[in-house]
Image (cartoon, rainbow, N blue to C red; front, side, top):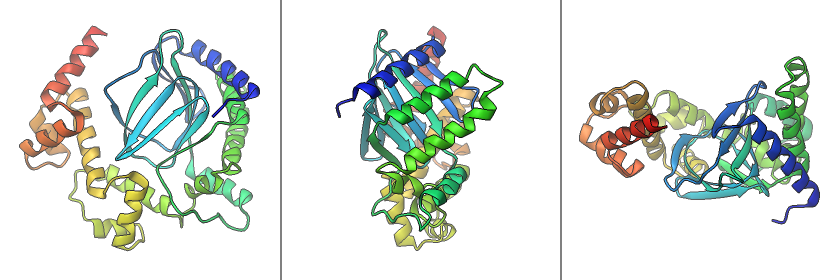
Length: 305
């Protein structure tokens, strides 16, 4: 989409602010709760697998690709990305260099706050939507970018930030709710919505990933029939519940081996695998490399850095 002069000006200002706050590549939290900044001076061919969080991403410069199951999403400064549920995703920075790095402002969404604001925006009830998903891509908006600019500027005003930032965050959420995808955004905080129910199931899976998965019981916890639960779970996450659990187990195993210095046997058992050989096969398919080689490569790169 073509970027208007006003939006281009705001994006340029946001990019300059992010460059000042991010002298190095990586992620930096602001002094404002649930807000942080991301910078990358290079693209990455190998996907980075992480668990997404509910939130809004405003790219000031560069572009990113995110894969969730079989679904692929791409966004740059002309668009915003809204993550409506926590899910294991694979991401690539697809446009960045040293002179023009990838720069992004991220604000996590409080579903309770969103629910309260939805009642104001939709006093007669939240609109029904035909399809819910974990990631939405929408056209960028100058007013949203301006809100991000205000929050970044407040980062260095520790005396004013606690007083003013909640108002700006509320404005951002209201602008999302009154946008063309406001109905979909409102579903995130609506307790009777499918996305809310599936989010509860996702949270349960994240907290109980080593346990055997019983889809019927998980559907019951979500107040849905097994068939409806399976359909909506796959619609939101692009994965079956079993595939989702497997993704979480493998990501957790990688974290355990890297950060707790445990071996493959121990890590596979901790995340719920009874067979080490099965774990190694699935790990290799998921990450494209065996667990022992993967951990050795990452540690070698960390030593070089």
